[in-house]
Length: 295
Image 1 (cartoon, rainbow, N blue to C red):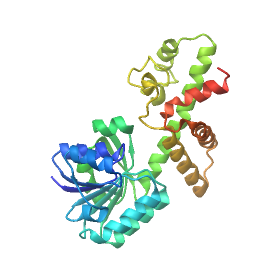
Image 2: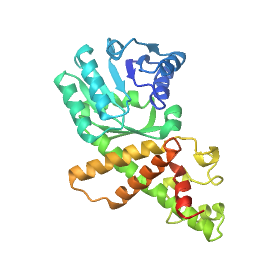
Image 3: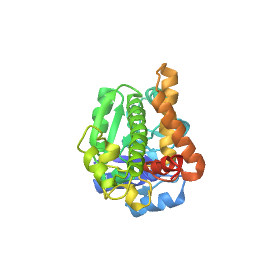
Image 4: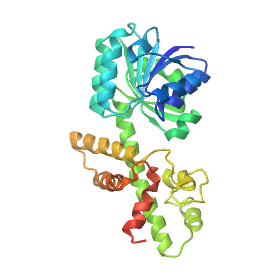
């Protein structure tokens, strides 16, 4: 078992760190928020006084932070306090350029590094069923995979530095677009007199099937575990979907790609967020679709 430092104990990072403790790793954790530190302590992690003190003696360092600037700030802070050859893994969802800069910082400091953003939401974080999309050198990925397997069920090496972030934003662009499409279909079905169950039974076994429908159906009933059955309490909040769709658009602009549906999805979610629904699960976008339909 490894000595692991875990920095960033929010809705995703906290449960992920707890799963490492359950797997038998010695986890030293830090977060700026006292309540997050307290929860991690109750989950069995040792609590450090700072990010820098958390990494001392660690063989693996994991960060789970809000944005690229936070990742780069923390990596700049902690790398001087890490032993040469330590593996540092970033599980945040950030822009590809910041991910590449983080890898460069690690290489300069003599560290192995992996960008490993996740998919699966808070439920996946708690249940250790996340998918990790990884970027980095083969040797670094091979070292990271065993510890990531304690937090997820699918670990994919997507390529070199930043490739994990590239895969994550492409995946979530598909997700954001498809959830809007599923919401529009259910609202149209309502206006045409179809029951939710009837539409689900047809589309979930026909060419309209997709994850947004079969696993995360945005109406109550057909999929009992979806947030629609719990007042759209977030597994993945709408404001996070805005973040990811914005990262996708930034990447598309930088790469010269044309993604009109991705851009429109970003605009729709930004409007939903601006209306005060940023804390609602992203599947709650169906509520916005109903508003547009005058229902």
